[in-house]
Amino acid sequence: MAEEKFQVIIIGAGMAGAAAAYRLAKAGREVLVVDRGSEPGAKNMTGGRLYTYALEELMPGEWLSAPLEREVTREILMLMTPQDSVAVDTMLGGASRQSYSVLRARFDPWLAAKAEEAGAMLIPGSTVDGLILRDGKVAGIKTGGEELEADLVISAEGVNALVAERAGLIRPVRAQDVAVAAKHVIKLSEEIINERFNTAPGQGAAIMCAGECTRGISGGAFLYTNKDSISLGLVVDSKGWKEAKMPLAEVAENLKQHPALARYIEGGELVEYSAHLVPEGGYPSLPQLYGDGFLLAGDAAGLVVNRGFTVRGMDYAILSGIAAAETANEAIEAGDYSRRTLQSYEARLQKLVLKDLETLKNSHDYLAHTRHLFTTYPALAAGLMKNLYQVDGQPAKKVTGLLKESIRGKLPYFDVFKDILKGGRSL
Image (tube, rainbow, N blue to C red; front, side):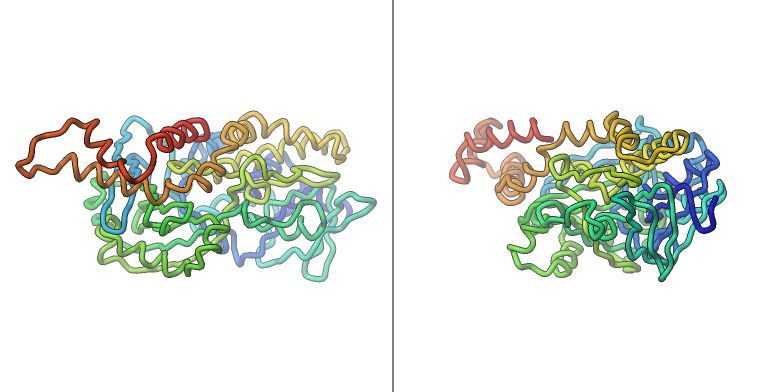
């Protein structure tokens, strides 16, 4: 290896970058990871929930020692009005080790350390200022006044991929393709969490909310139980948030006061507050994933799907890291880092990640532009449930009659039918 030249340089030590570094180091490659945080995870923010099939694909069995929080065994979907809520509560005792809540400040250093143990080199606290370009090919990075050369550069720098953008490899992030997220981490004892969520030690709950939690803006709220804390926050469509002109911090603070959620966090201590952009444009907004000497992975590539009841991103990031590493290995063996060789990266992603994004390509449009979804429908659901449970000495009505009564005057029946049909096809 020439002085200060690596086979692969990875920008970002998040899940995509660390996964790629781990796989490449395991294959004996000369790989460098550069991250602007003081340590991996220092600048990473997520809800967050990790589906473990991706970890098993990355490091079979080894992931069981990872600092994950709680296995999600209880799923709750909630529609909210200013005072009321309607929830579907599901216990998933048979879904063993399918997913865990995770705190990135704990998990990311562990994954990066695994990559270092395998032989990768990590430089934290370093900002990549630009890429080295020679004859249209990426040939390394510029950082701290120095140039570090590489046969291949993998950008895993996150949703706002400024290095790739400034080099002209991808277009700037568009408002309609991202959401804005805000999160509180609230400390509570493990015993209190177990009691309030009716979960056994090591098991936890995930709550996804829509309606008043975002003041009617397209988006939703989330709650995940960690070992000794709760992650509570919201995600709103950035375009809708801008048009609504509402302070996001104020909406996030009010979320903690809603009767449906306040009981879960009562007496807790706020230990962290953060905000972040989330890629949500989906399949139609995907950038070019490869170029001469260059690959794009994780959030930088927009590999996230929001279906309302689930949000997928961290598992896709890991899979893209694996695919990037496999593609890099192929290029190293061939001694060819051209677009023609690196296009196999897209084929690897197509097996699951891109296939999912294509299948759900209309999900973002449906969630962002179904105008009754976050206002009228939560109110209709709450009204219907009140009617179902109301006993006031009046003659009983059939459920179909109560349903029609709840909808009548609010919106046309045909609009409800169209939204249900579109949702079934989009989500």
